[in-house]
Image 1: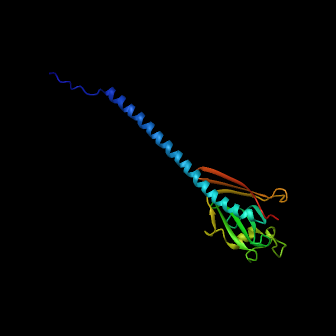
Image 2: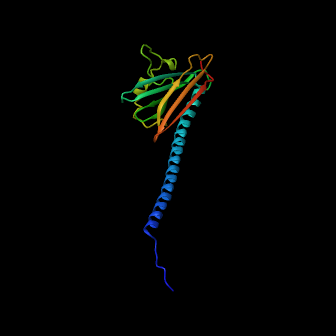
Image 3: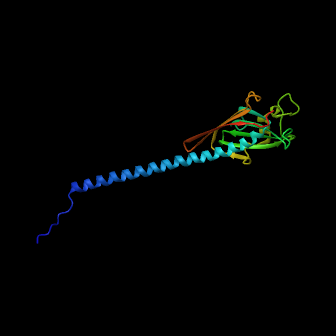
Length: 204
């Protein structure tokens, strides 16, 4: 019998290579798209978790707070832009002041931090022209933070990835006793924003 030793032609090999290249390209695109989608979801969940931690802490304090004070933006001694919220916490009776909580964001490391100071703490610095602190509005928040040297400290950490922290105290506590809080975060090219309106039970 006559044997058939004929193999693949050059054209057939080229066609096979092209088909395999197309299939490989589709697989790579599918895997790459899946990985990118996973990374986006992971980044968003990571930032949402950080924002939830911060919002939960602020919410628990703000609901019971007797008064709020927001500093707006200021530059600290390290050259970082900061914003801070100071809250006046009542004691168990709900009448007298127990402590002051300062929550601040600093732009040099995109973190939010907090500190608790008792009402008679010597670290609290009154505003210029005032000798005593009778409430949260009498506190010079930026000078108090500077005097505590908290900007280089790793203690009292609240959350990370924060690019903006805005707190707007109520302008008319009698009719609208609500603190408006907004936190913006950025991580690995993804962004997330959380906002909350918090009504106080003890606002005076």
